[in-house]
Length: 265
Ligand SMILES: Cc1cc2nc3c(=O)[nH]c(=O)nc-3n(C[C@H](O)[C@H](O)[C@H](O)COP(=O)(O)OP(=O)(O)OC[C@H]3O[C@@H](n4cnc5c(N)ncnc54)[C@H](O)[C@@H]3O)c2cc1C
Image (tube, rainbow, N blue to C red):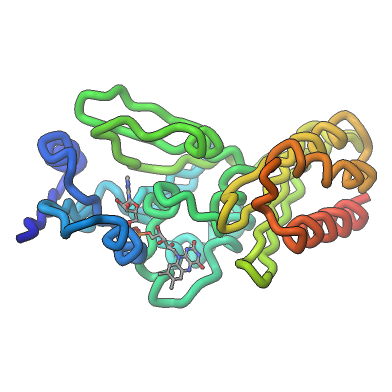
């Protein structure tokens, strides 16, 4: 028998999660089948986040944007201020069947390391807010999540995005490939004709967020040019020595980034 718990506030949610550390957390339920398949037997307890109003909503402000963990892909891509301030993320959230987009939450996407959206969050410097009843609140960069496990008792409460910066150039592309789509996100901060900051991230089903650090380093401090793309193969070798990213995805990402940089230059 499975018991369903529906807390109504964050306080009640954290207490319930603390008291039932083995309970399954249910957000939009779009990834539910995958989660259930991983379990040998049905969960004894399920904590449903849908009744917690404090986890819903989008607040766009001068100092950045707050996305409640239960904001759906549909709500994110449909919000006019989000589209204006964070086009990279709204494009990432625009794909997928409508029934999935209406349910899948940003908290579930981050918790599930979904390659469709993580690259956009990474180039934007998004931070994820974790909280637990007896764990201090923390805000981690998305890339840190890829190498760290959440502490026991912690839940994702929100995602914070920095405000858009003057001189920012953004890229988002999703390309269909044989063994899964390839997602390419880029952000350059250009001032006085020079690249001040560069973030280039590629996502595939096996590698949800690869920061192409070698190529980024070749761009910073220089006028925009596509020359650092010559380092793409080496960048992949450094990041993905096992070769989990297909040659198709490597070639497609190099082509997209080269064409973007050539256009900008
Ligand atoms: C047919 C199909 C197509 C899809 N297409 C796309 C697509 O195009 N783009 C895309 O981005 N995604 C896509 N997805 C994936 C979907 O976005 C993910 O499954 C996502 O994780 C679902 O979010 P959810 O809110 O429904 O989470 P759930 O299914 O409710 O939960 C997923 C996991 O995240 C954990 N979790 C959820 N919220 C929290 C939280 N706040 N704190 C801690 N842990 C939490 C849950 O415990 C569970 O382990 C697709 C899925 C399906 C089935």
